Amino acid sequence: MEEKVFSYIEQYRMIEAGDQVIVGVSGGADSVCLLFLLWEYQKKVPFSVQAVHVNHQLRGSEAKRDEEYVVRLCRELSIPCSVYSYEVERIAGKRHMTVEEAGRAVRQQAFSLEGKKAGAKSTALAHHRDDLAETVLHNLARGSGAAGLAGIHPVRRMGDGVYIRPLLCVGRSEIESWLLKKHIAWMEDSTNKELSYTRNKIRERVLPELKEVNPRAVEHIAKAAQTFLSVEEYLGQQADMLYSRYVRGHEDGLFLSEEISAEHPVMQAYVVKRVLAYLAGGEKDITSVHVEEALELLGQRTGRQKSLAHGITVQQSYGNLLFYKKGDREILPKELEFHVFSWENQQIPEKKYTKWFDYDKIKGNLTVRKRQPGDYLTVTSAGGRKKLKDYLIDCKIPRQERENLTLLADGSHIVWVVGYRISEYYKITGQTKTVIKVQVKGEKEDE
Image (cartoon, rainbow, N blue to C red; front, side, top):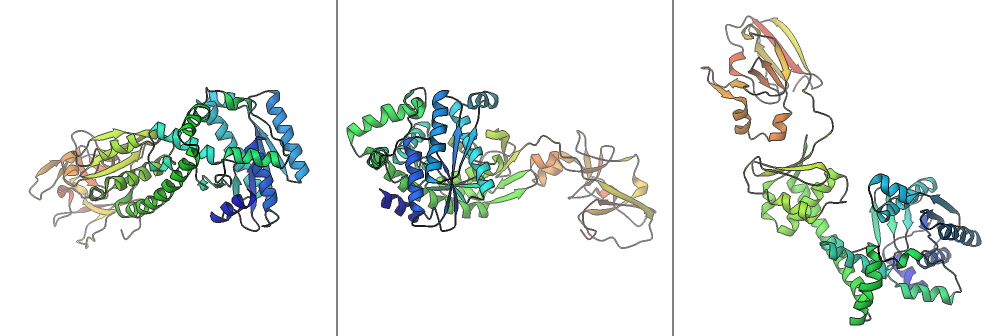
């Protein structure tokens, strides 16, 4: 089995000479096997191994037994070992997570902490082919797409770490047979038989039935997962290209061009999922339902919107889709600077963030604010007016952006929609005596 696992490590370039590798060791057959194989692989490729054991404080004396066994085993192999202990049940309650989710979270935390201390490139985990098959079936039952059917990846970046899984090429029975042949002991986790855990149900009930259909069922599921992984990697590459073509940044979120409609529905979904993952900070809890709800807005009327996961809103905006996530802090109006001076027929340049107005026409106190009901602009030299709302709609300014526009106002009369147009009424003419210059603070003088 050594050569099989070593070839798998080399196939995916998991470990290179000089690497520092963290290995998670629970004390069970899988992780003990991984520890010994990495210890053996050091004779072939010079690299360093650092073991990490996480005590979840869930099984009383049995958990303490496992911890002591791992520490003793690492001492015999001269492999450094760090032990982390967490009250997983309490953490699960506090964070409103299942015990399984909390356990996974604290393990990742421990691996990350130890990895940073040791300067490790990667963390090796002991998932094997049976785990891969269980994951595929679990994801399939939950309604997963191609990504979920790829199951567990041999090499995967998560957060600031890289996780490698050298045992995905072998099954549970191979692992236990190898350990027995080598006279290596391991610890049994009594909770692995409890059917209250979903994965245990798949392991104890579903997979045995599938093996009745075909003894090589696990191997075939793993092979299918490998195919799906290749498909997923290819589609991911295509999605990245489409993302750069159709998605652009916006001060409130991300815009997805309506031109995405010309692409295959599968690729539309991949791009939308990338948009949602970017705003959410990860793919957790983003499902195909959220993607479908967003895509349903394509072709609908402007203004229609839907609330998705992680507080993300998607809104139809003149054919395009605007995705945004409302922050806890209100976006304040831009700060403006004012300068009043006598007018002597100077030349007025065209600038986006600096404007000049006839000061004598201002009737009240100028205010810098966001829009309010009743706001209007003078849009013709003859004095024709237009509601501010109608002007913004005509300019196809998205609703979310409208709410955050900075306005310079004389009562309800809008002097300047900052970044857009000024009112015709306040423009400088031959009769102008006094001018007020207004500039957006922080913007370049020549803009």
